[in-house]
Structures are given as structure tokens and as C-alpha cells.
Image (tube, rainbow, N blue to C red; front, side, top):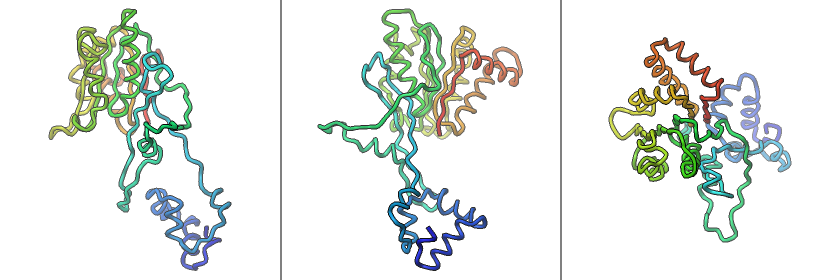
Length: 289
């Protein structure tokens, strides 16, 4: 860009950004602030770059991956997604919105000509469980997406075959604003539904901001430690889905505590035991940033 800058002070600034000495300042200015190409050009108005060069400089959009939140048996020829609209404030107090999530949220589902969404389907990290496998599901926030599909599928299986218990630990900030698929979960947690006590299952919710003391899924797991250990002793599989920032590590640590306490072994031995579960196909994690 400095080659096409006609203002000397802009040329010098761009050359500084491109130098080893300016690397940290470039990170603060560009990457950390998530500036767009248009914003950079606005900051350096003397840059007169040919369009073909601009196109070559702009990187292609990255594909986005979302967990499918619907059962193909319950919704043939449909794919349901659970997408959180991303927004954040930059260090310089600029409000940013996720490109793909905002675009999806802005689509008109009643458009008469239909809406074209480029998409693909690939195998994820959470294999569909057989109906005979007891399940311990942990999915706060949009981590509930794949488990909605699991519960829908098992509800259909429940009509024709005997199914094993399913417990689901869900978490969100507020009951009124963030309780995704509230009616869906509650309906399956009663009247002999997949998550009902009558079926040996359970549905446990942690609302982290509805009380002075924050409550997360791992707190609910500790409250249900006996149930978790009973299911693990019966051959249950653990499925974890959600944010990759802290949740998987915190949940895994809680599982180690539960196993350690119930079996009378050290936490290090409990960690090794969980790794053996993973090798045996009974411990899965799907996390995203």
C-alpha cells in the first residue's frame, strides 16, 4: 500500500508498519482492532491502489462451521442450525458484528424466491450414539445444538425400541433471554420424555447471571455427582459441546473430581481413566472459539 500512497506521512507510516520495528504497532492498529480494508483505506486516503491489486490483497472469506441441531429422521430434507449473533467492542471502543452470523440473522425466511445459502455437510466430532448407549450431555450456550438433534433422534427411537437414559446439563446467562429451546427441553424432561426421571434421565440448567453467585454447568454436575457416576458405571458416554475458551477444561476437571471422589482414586488417576474412556469411544468433545 505504501507504494501507492501519495502523501509522504502516510507512506512513511505504512512503511513503518511493514518493518520489523513496526510489527507490534501494526498488530495493535490492525489485527487487534479488526480493521476492515475499507477502514484502512479511509485512514490512508492518499492511497490510490488499482482495483486488481486491491482484489488480490483482500483474503477470501473463511468458511464457517456450525453444528447441525436437528435430527434427519425428525426433519427429513432439512438442516437446522443454532447460531449466536456475534458482536463485541474493540480496544478502541468500536462495535463489531460477526459477518456470517449477522448475515444469516438478516435473511428473510418469507422471501418468495427463496434464500440461497452456500453450505456443505461434513462429519463432526460427535458421532450419533446408538439407542442402547446411556448419555451424559454437557452443552452450555449454543453447545446445546448437537444435543437437540440427539434428543430428537432418541425420542423417535423411543417409539419402537428400548432406549437408555439421557441426562443433559445446559447453561446460559439469563433464563429470560438466553434459554435456548426452553420449551423443547422442558417437554422432553416430563411425561416419560427422553430427559425425564421416569426414563432415568434428567435436565439440569445453570443460569450464571440470575443470582449474585455465578452458577455454571460444572456446579450442577457436582450436585448430580452420584447420578453421573451411576451412569458412567453403567457404560454411559460423555459428550461435551460449546465454547473452547474455558468450558471444556473446567467440565473435564469437574468430571475428574467426580470420578476421583466416587472411586476413591487420585485426580491424576481419574484423568487417566477419562482418557481411557476417550480411547474407548465414550468421551467426546466438540468445541469452537
